[in-house]
Each structure stands twice: as C-alpha cells, then as structure tokens.
Amino acid sequence: MSDIAKIQIGENTYEFPLVKGTENETAIDIKALRGATGGVITIDPGYKNTGSCQSAITFLNGEEGVLRYRGYSIEELAEKADFLEVAYALIFGELPTKEQLDKFYGDILDEAIVDDDIKKIIDAFPKNAHPMGVLSSLTSALTAFNPSSVNVDSEEDMYKAIVKIMGKFPVLVAWTLRKKQGLPLNYGSRKLGYVENILTMMFQKPNDEYELNPIVKDALDKLLILHADHEQNCSTSTVRIVGSSHAGLFASLSAGISALWGPLHGGANQAVLEMLEAIKEDGGDTKKYMAKAKDKNDPFRLMGFGHRVYKNFDPRAKIIKKAADEVLNNLGVEDPILDIAKGLEHEALNDPYFVERKLYPNVDFYSGIIYRAMGIPVEMFTVMFALGRLPGWIAQWREMRLNKEPIGRPRQVYVGENSRKFVELDKR
Image (cartoon, rainbow, N blue to C red):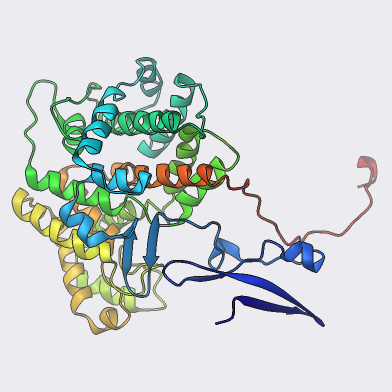
C-alpha cells in the first residue's frame, strides 16, 4: 500500500500522508486539507469515519470482537487482574508491581475524604433527582474545593490529581445512592480493598455490619473492568474535547458524566431494565416480544442485544454472562424481571434470526441483570457505569494533555440563509 492518499477535487489532485497504527489501522492525515484546497473540508456526522487523535490506551476491533487495554486482552484482565490494577495500567501504561499498587491504593485512601460542605450540596437535591445529575454536579463541585489547576508538566501534580479523584469518586457514587435511599452518608475503611469499600459504602446499614459476598464482589470487579475504557466513544471524546481547552480534570470528568447519561450511551443498561419491566406489565411473554423485535413494522425495539461497534459477539458479554449466572445462582433471587431476562437470552441465543444477524446479548444486558440482582436501583445503573469508566476517562485526559493536543474545534458546512438585509421592526 502506498503511504500517500490522493484526493481529486475537480481537475486538481491533492496528496495527503497516511498514518498507520500498530494494529495496521490506516488513516488519511487531512489536517492540511483546508489550506491546500482553499477551503474544502470533510463532513462526517457522528465522526464515524474520523479519527480525533492517536491513542496508545485501548484497541478495539469490532469486526473480530477484540478489546485490549494497553495491549492486554480484556479476557485476561477480567480473569487475572482486579479493577485497581487495570485502572493503574490504563492510566500509567503498565501493570503495576506489588509495591506500585500498594502505594497507589494507599495514596487513594489518603484522598478518600470529601469536604464536609459537599454534604450540604447533596442535601439540597430532592430524593427523586436523577443520580447522574447529582453525580455530575458533585464532581463539578469538587473543583470549588480543589481550586488549584493541575500542572500537567509536573508528574507529581498529575499523580496527586489522579489519586484525589480515584479516592473521592467512589464516595460520591455511594453518597448518591444513599441519598436516594434515605441512608446516612458514610465512608469506607482502610482495611478494605477498593471494590470492597465501594460495596460497603453503598450498602452498609447504620445499625448493622455489612457482610461482603465474594461472588458479588468478583462480579462487580469484572463489571468495572469491562467498562473501564472503550476507545473514543461519546463520553470519552467529550472528556478529551473539554480537556483540550485546558479545563481541569474534575470539570472534564463532569462533562463526561453528562455525556454518559444519555440513553444511547451509558443509559443503555437502564433502558434494558425498563424494557423488561414493560414486558412484565404486559404479561411477560418473551416469545411475543421476540416476534415483535423481528417485525420491521413494529415500533418495539429490543434493548441490550447487538452492538454498534461489535459486529460479532461483544467480548465483554461473554465474560459477564458467566458472572451473571454465578450471581443469580448464589443469591437465589426470585424475581420475575430476571426470569424474563433469562427467557429473552435463551430465545436470542437459539433463534436463527438473531444468531444469523449476530444480535447477541451485550454487556449492557448482563450488567443490568447483575445490578438488579445486587439490589442497585435502575436509576443508579449509569452511575455504576461511570464508576467503571473513571480510570479510562482519566487516562484519556492525561494522554491528551501530555500529547499537547490542540483545542478541539470542528468545522461545519453552513446550510442557512444567504446574506440578506435587515428589516426594521415596524416594517416586518
């Protein structure tokens, strides 16, 4: 393959270099296009064919069903690592040694206290406020209590900002849940691991000890790992573009949370449970709804099946399906909603229509089932997604700042009115 791409516009031909990634991905470098052609730009709504950056963090091949963080397969990481190890690898590029991991967690624990005035902010929210709105607001509010900007040229400053948000964010997540449930706001324990602390802060009752279930803990660990990064998706691109203006880490993360909130992105697992509730209200007939999903004239949309990026089985779904089965068996939950979910899963994995089109249950389908079985309210599902995605966002923000990427400023093709004269108010 030539290292040059030729673009012909009218009678003129322009040459642009090709950029090749380490996994043989190829891109046309068009940053000189507008200048060379006297104003011609490309248009790509949704940026489906546009690379916004060169990144060394996550590799995703949707056709082959491959997902790797820093070169490590998602399958191996989910089986052999814990969430904090994966977070360290995503952010700093390498899996940590035992000493590095211990120091990382110790430094995180030192920062796992939130200014008490944050409680006044959370108290101001009504109980029915959506948890994602609360979390986004609290994350943004951290900026007010940590006003100094991060000196990205200082490794020490960058590290301090990272352990600060890794320490405080799980507290905000737990407080968001406890506010919704009317429970007192609490903290974790230095005696517990990162994920164990998350579960304890979320579920411990004021008059009782919280008993950690190792199967639930392992499932949550895997869920957080599977959601930790996913290349240049909507929320990650938002974090990078906000950060490109040299906005701080907390402000950039708050913007990412807001982007994740949408039902087409992080809200997908919430949409799965809402669909299951609707099927239950209509009698719970899974065969009926699978038939509706196959009917092109029926407006019903099957949530949690297939994936826009993965054209094969979502590799994350293979991992989390096993964890979902283990959680449901261990907890012995009797829930008609989960029974409906199992029915839909069985139908999709055995119906030729779904198998031929590779419309398999995806990670959102199984994560919703697990969170429901764990007793997490459906409105909190996207918050849990944000908790998992935190290290990925941090890694992407850090990479963007260290690479000194320019401020994001897309172009447009104007399709409005041509120049026209102003008409005075009394003559309109």
